[in-house]
Length: 157
Image 1 (cartoon, rainbow, N blue to C red):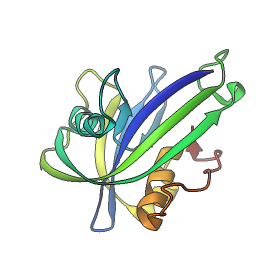
Image 2: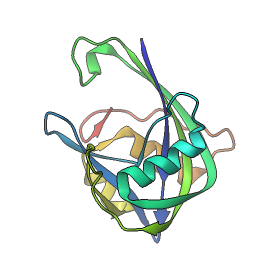
Image 3: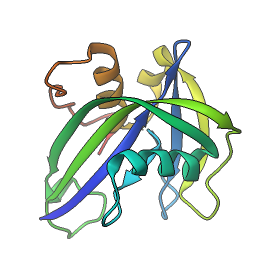
């Protein structure tokens, strides 16, 4: 089984959420939260600030920890065929944008970042991370845990 530890930013302001459009090497596109892999020796708190800057061009301030999501993606459902099962552990932070200007990620896979009205999210092809982050921001569970998000249709791994 492969494993990834990542930190994600949930930026919600005035009924909108900041989303990043990820484009795969094959040209497929879906919306996700700014964030990414925690590098060796890096604090996830610092990861989310770094990832927001890299992917969106904006500076960010972490306001609070929202929760942690752990999910196993079966090998048959992975985007890369032939790979093993994959566990993704995501740490979700409530983040406020403090400066900068939205732009594509230079030399990266984020084609654009946009403020999206929350009611419009349901109509987007998106990562399950978006639904998890919004659910954590809306419910703020004391345990920091939400029920698994079903994947299918517009919601992708």
